[in-house]
Length: 195
Image (cartoon, rainbow, N blue to C red; front, top):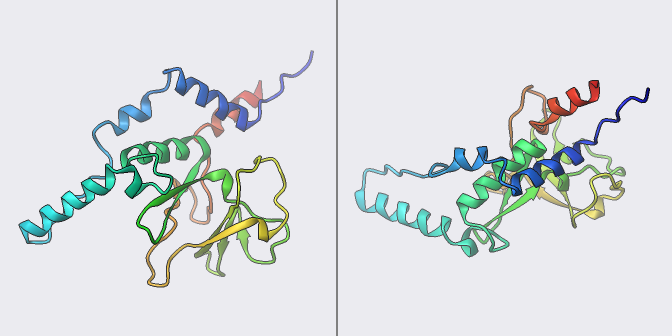
């Protein structure tokens, strides 16, 4: 009797995406419906509070102001971030000087095989495991394809010169030393592998 082969995790994720498109997976949309990040400034000045609230709303509802690709509102980006975190284990929105965000999917953050630095799963760390920069592939690559040269990546500093975060690495670590996230479907894949 032949043992059933375990489908690769990327096949399970692809099945998830098909199920989502067919309307069978609505948990994320239900969670984020009419919630999400909604700033409530409290400066002590009602006019300043109203201005900040209105400025946020104008930015968050305009795809061209908040999304580098000009495709998603902030609420749509929140949904994408939650989905990416559940399916891939993490996702990496990157802020830029224009005031927009670029969402980098997990498979774009990779470690080139020729690097001499302390890079763990695409994240360069200092001797205390502080995140210094993230290495993203220049283009969409097959996650199974080897990434050989550092020159095939775009490094993005974790923080700008003023100390402000530039890469908002979203994941749910289960260990202090964990550098990257794990898919919520990893247990399903483990269970399938047992049968």
